[in-house]
Structures are given as C-alpha cells and as structure tokens.
Length: 319
Ligand SMILES: Nc1nc2c(ncn2[C@@H]2O[C@H](COP(=O)(O)OP(=O)(O)OP(=O)(O)O)[C@@H](O)[C@H]2O)c(=O)[nH]1
Image (cartoon, rainbow, N blue to C red; front, side, top):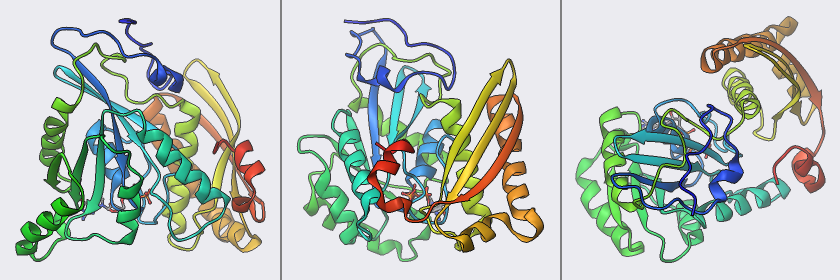
C-alpha cells in the first residue's frame, strides 16, 4: 500500500493517479472520491466550483456545456474531497457525442465513495430519473436538491422530499442553494463521514488534476458560449493547437471548431469584434488563474457534422 503524497504541483497531477490503490489509514485524515451527477443544467458545475472554492469547471446557462470529466480537490481541516464532475446524462439527442457522454457518466461513478445526485428542488422529471437509474447499486447517494432559492412555494418541499424518499434509498437529503457559501460548507460536512479514513492523495493546495492545457480550452469554451449567448449550438468545441511553456510565459494557439459557416460568422462577429473579446476575456482570466503571462492566438474553423463522427471525437480527446 502506498502512503506517499501525490505530486504537489498545481494543475499538473495526472488523472491516472486516481486509479492507484488507496493509501493506508493515517490517523486523523480522511480522503475519498465524490461524483457529482445530474441532468444538464441542474447546477453541477456551479456546485463543483463552490465545493472546491475556485472555478475549475465552466458554468453556463446553456445546457450541456460540461463534456469532460473534471476533478476538483478541496482539503478542509482533516478531510480531502476529490470531486468528479460528470456531463449530464444526455437524453434528447442520440448521436455519437451523446453515446460517448453516457459512457463517461458510467465509468466516473463506478469507483467513487459517494455520489451527489443533483436535482432542482421541487422538480423530478424523466431526465432526472434516467440519471438515477444509471447509478450502481450499493453506492451511497446523497440527494442534493439544488436551486432552493428558486422554489417559490416552500410548503411543497417536505412532501416533495418524502416522494423522493420513496424513489431511492438516498443516504441523505440536502435541500440547498449552490450559490450560498454556508450551505456549500454544510454539504461538505455532510459528505465527510462517507469518505474513508486514509491519508490524503494530494497536497493541500492542489485544486485539480487537469492539465493547464485542458483548463485553457475550458476557459475559451466558457467565453465562447457566454459571448455568443444562445445562438451557438453546443456542438462547437475548442482544440489547442500549440501550447508552449517558457517559465511564466505561455504561448497558446487554439481553434474554435463550429459546424456551419453561419456559426463561424457568429463567433467572429462584426469586424472580428466578438472573437477578439473571447480571446481577451479568456486571456485575462487565465493570467490570474495560472499566474502567468499569456499570448493567445484564436482561430475559427468549420467542421461540418463532427458531432456524429466517432473517429473524429476520439481525435479531439472525448474517448
Ligand atoms: N438560482 C440558482 N441558480 C443556480 C444555482 N446553481 C446553479 N444555478 C444556475 O443554473 C445554471 C446551470 O448551472 P451549471 O452549473 O452550468 O449546470 P450543470 O448542471 O453543470 O449543467 P451542464 O453542464 O449542462 O450539465 C447556471 O445559470 C447557474 O448559474 C442555484 O443554487 N440557484
């Protein structure tokens, strides 16, 4: 059994480390994996960022913005929480991209200690039921009834929770608002006993195991979706073509891949104005996050039908 701490460098811990055998107990320390699952748009990314205490996953009003498995790490007092964010279980479209997303959901919950099943407080639909049906038996599942602030008729909460109790043997019921720090803190306390007593896997200040390169593409994607509003289909993506690290300098070239010529126009905007803004906002936020000077070159390309092409998906890293 391995009791060594994992490498300390921020953003640079390898995903494979998560598959290593757990460390032996270290008195007074707990450490474990927590999966966050739920249908699109219930607030999983918002919750993950709040739980980790820093932005590691992108959030957007547009459904289906999370495609990759992202882990965020939070070390609080004696406990290290390693979060696994999953894409929403896709129910509306059935193309290669969505089949791939469903596989990601399944593989990311198989080896965790506890699952946070996120729904909107007071609501439970077919989409939620399909996600719940995917969860392996015997795994402790905590029902997180998020967006409590949006529930107008509070009296409906208790009967709704009771109906949820009948649907699944949930380990805990946590009605909350992911946007309120004290409620996020309470959720961390509720999760704590579900994590085994063992030594921490990462250094205290590690936030995510994802590479800088990945964070950069996620940041560009976030700006892309925010600045194009609802016009751009979710099938648009970002590929990093060049990533050079020279001390505290990064030279990055990235391509935004869209499906149609019309989408290319939306991304570029009048006189290139929108593309410029996407680049500037991504660069400014990344400079703060990575504490580095960044040169960012952005391109836009049309790649028709990519969401239906399994081969191409693999080459973009969705396998
Ligand atoms: N009012 C309210 N809004 C919330 C809360 N949590 C999240 N939201 C909003 O809900 C929307 C979706 O949040 P996300 O965190 O992107 O949802 P997600 O589940 O990760 O979505 P996908 O990436 O599509 O799977 C955003 O506009 C959030 O600001 C909450 O507790 N209260």
